Image (cartoon, rainbow, N blue to C red; front, side, top):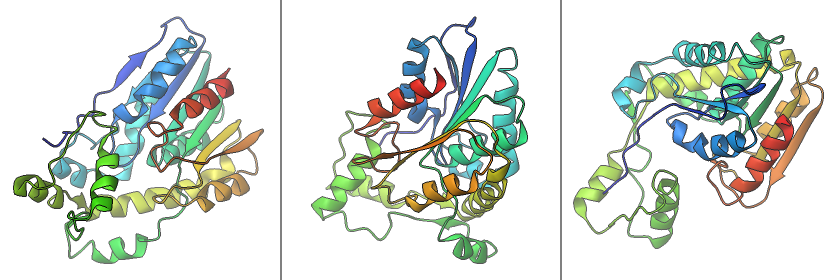
Length: 270
């Protein structure tokens, strides 16, 4: 069986905490990729809200109909729900990092600190999706892969283990292969993502709170230069720190160095 994504928001930690943290997942992801971090922060006595970003229900048709305005509105609502807390931090992964930086730029008096993990400042394929948007509806990322190759199988299986650590995929089953190759992303949603990333990059100089950047040197989805660009553009963030990971890929909150990520975020908030 292939794991099915369900995006379920969560609330963790003591309600009477002085500090709260809003956790924001990435594009086409779910709040589950932030749950381990949420558990680690809750143990430290921090109130944690893991938001389910609008359009990310697991239904690709729903994502195709959503826009960057919807995504921004959902995290704005998540921030508003933490209004009673004395100190509020925002931590996001990938697109969630972009949304976190936008919240910090728009609410300088409200947000105590921001953590941006694996966060893009540019997407290399933005011109392709904007060009294709009027003509194509879907992009099939796995359609051309040769799943007879053990290395391809290994990489795909690794990408699915955060959904279900015990997942087992029978790559010899034609129905399973058809489901994998039929997995799709909305061209429209990808175009909205590229525009959101551009908006986030333009607003980085407006971030005035403490900033922690965490990025893996081995990230192939969002290249490491993006972290360096955020640090360079964040001219008003004080203090700002960039921490490099050595062994992780893109989704660092569930990768092999996740405990280090949890510790870094917890210490930053403390």
